[in-house]
Length: 127
Length: 353
Image 1 (tube, rainbow over the protein chains, first blue to last red):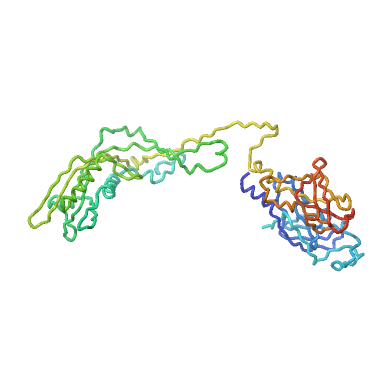
Image 2: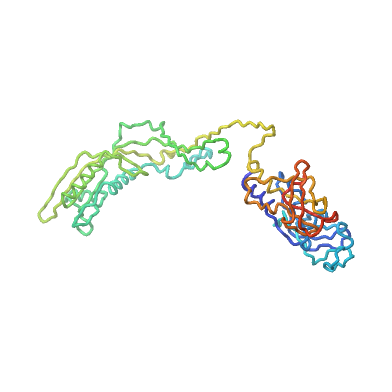
């Protein structure tokens, strides 16, 4: 291992990047699918994989709210990174007393194409 | 490089400075430069210092000076003061005769561009290779020069002769160039005052220089050969008493605790214990390495989200139970009580086991 590899490791684990996702498919029966193009998960140095599990490598936020890793699955297809929010993990009855993004209290939770969905973590642009 | 040498393995790139040899012009130039820069003093004329020029006496100049007793410049002015010298003869020095076909003079250059810096050389205590030059034995010769000095005054002549006398039996040359031992035995002084001519003080003497000659190539073969001394590598014995598998030391091993600490990141849903306490199960809290104390932001060790909302570190304290691998978080001043329905997600510096 040389200094260059050491620098690479630091880039992998200590340089988080943030990306905005766009709605890809909101009509899927099981998921709300969002994606960011030309982005991928950084390759992690093999000896560090046990120290940073895949669910801890990035955080997902909807409208600024943290989303648990149990509520979505992620997929890399080609150069694009997809987040699939699992519909069944979100409330079927919106319990808030106030209207949120047009969702009335009592309605099922939903995502809309103009929602602010961000991802931050060990990601990089595909060049 | 010898063009006849077609075996690439035997070809060695030698810098031009090492193959230029020693020629007669090098000897003449060295002697002349030493006279100009070290021996010949400035003389004082009418209160000003006058530099005494030195000329090499080619055949025309020398004969002219011999016949007339002085030298005129192109405008017809008698050149005074002046020092002129010429090479008279070259003789073989029998005392230093060598069998040149066999003998060589070795020389080392301690720096070599082949000695690159590498950690391997540090670990093995390797000694670097030297550049070794085998220089053919030169031809030792005795070169005789004849020198003539002209001045207007005896006082000037005395000053110049004194300097030459003091320089005898010394090595003439520069520190970084050639050096040749030069000897002067006697000076022949003459004063000439002709009718209608200038008063001229003239001194002539012969000096003998012990020098050597070395051609660049002889029989189309270079007279300098270059080689490298072998690199020395000392292998030590390292014993691992820990019983773990021995692996070669590397930077990761050297800084493993720091790298591992930076790499550690967990993201896990916490379990609500009661209305102000949650816990993370099956996790390990890493120890902050000494190297990162002061630079790592310990306030943001964790990021706690309750129902998606970030909670500042002021709202909680935490403790680690290393026996059961549990990190417990105790909340204060939240403004509400925690419920089992609440989703508490925690990310940060903990390792998921």
